[in-house]
Length: 293
Ligand code: 5RP
Image 1 (cartoon, rainbow, N blue to C red):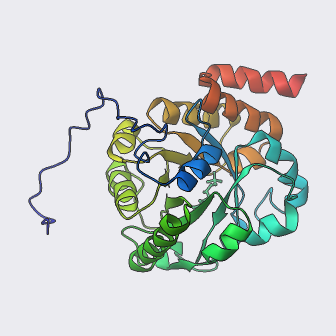
Image 2 (cartoon, rainbow, N blue to C red):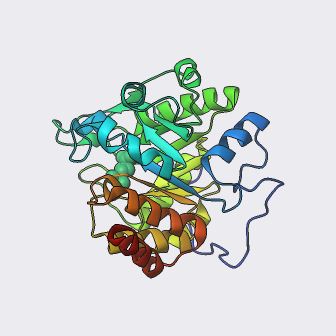
């Protein structure tokens, strides 16, 4: 067993060496089964290699979040502009038409609600694979609290979900969640993203941070970023642009889209960064053009 103390500090991420493709476009996933690859090809566009995920799962801990009071009103019209819909089974079954043909990433853990002081206390599986397959899910999202009180339970949920995911060909998206007292540094995200991938996550979701290129390089499977709290549109596009430039394979963005005054235009602008190599400035110009035309 490696010692925690006295290890050499990781520093050479070989940023100049590209990762071999193993006959499949998604990093590190060339040795998975046909069904898993088929689902990954719905989650990530095989041409750009990237994904524009729309996250609206906030209600599972926050209740009626601003912008999500009526999912049928705020989210259903946005679906055609995203590649992936990320939500709970309750929200999707009740408010999203089954004719929406975007890939589904089902929120598959329950966590402490906002009534508790620190959400990092615990986590457990919120659905089983049979129901996920019934809903035609392309991925399951598992919240993990590396370094938090809920580390053990949440990593256990990740491992059990990964077992079921490999059995049925469903990729698991491991989410590096940060509780109240948990740091948001590159040092932390380097640790947490790698642990989730090593335990079986096929995709890892994290936050954008300094030295993000190291976080992306050190994670052997595709990384997507969460948006976080609402920013001015230009700043959110800059964050998305920097993340993609640094090796992220997409965004899983919520509040910066559905809390925008112009959510469809914002969703389209983020999509331009993710799939069409727009710079942040070009994407913001596109956003302004859409809202003024
Ligand atoms: C929380 C999540 C949310 O889906 C995620 O935070 C995305 O939403 P936002 O862009 O609003 O942060 O996974 O862990």
